[in-house]
Length: 323
Image (cartoon, rainbow, N blue to C red):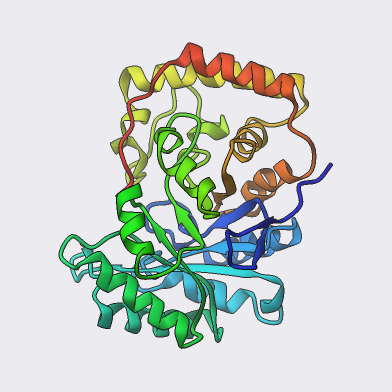
């Protein structure tokens, strides 16, 4: 049975369980990205039943991802749920700058609306807490944008439960966006139960762990110069080899089910308690079509049992946080 769209917390919005993560189409850390491929990727996602597009002001050196979405979705705005983010931008030397001050958030929201060519952002995230600005100030700024009708619902990304509570005290939250996948499951102990209790959607990123869990990187893969992935522990040394052992198990399970590894992994992710949507990044149409195939059929108890056994053999992974 195909998976139906899911409620996005208490926002009144319904989103496809697979969302298109629009970081790769900006081409900042992905190789061989073209505007033609990126537009075709968005088109393919919509055609495959995905209605949820997730981007950010800093996806691209100057809002490139937002502009690309704005050019591509003309005439289809009403059928889509568009999420974007504020609070992080790039400096003149390409350095990442945190600025979640009230003035900056208001400015970034209006600029995002212009780039996206829309009148209201469906879901607006604080991309991450700014260590130099009280979280209450950032929350108040986003609450003001909601009151002005510029955003439909507020959200926050890369937060602890304590930070989420601090934000909530000022601004109601419809969704939270943390990293989560088979190898990064820390949120299961705190953030997941809290969000389930308070009807907050969990829209997780890195379900395929930057392509690792798609199962297409062989054990002897050599990363090209400019590929940003080798800086992460899961792509290095013993962790890489143990992850490849896990992928061997996943390939066998997927083959028995007549699925791809990516399809199986996304289905596993969406079957976990509390997970509303998985943001699947893609830079070419065939990548998001494969992830979207997770919506097309069932994930069985037998598959879950086999995957959990494989994860137990893998053991705890050494990872690194995203922000």
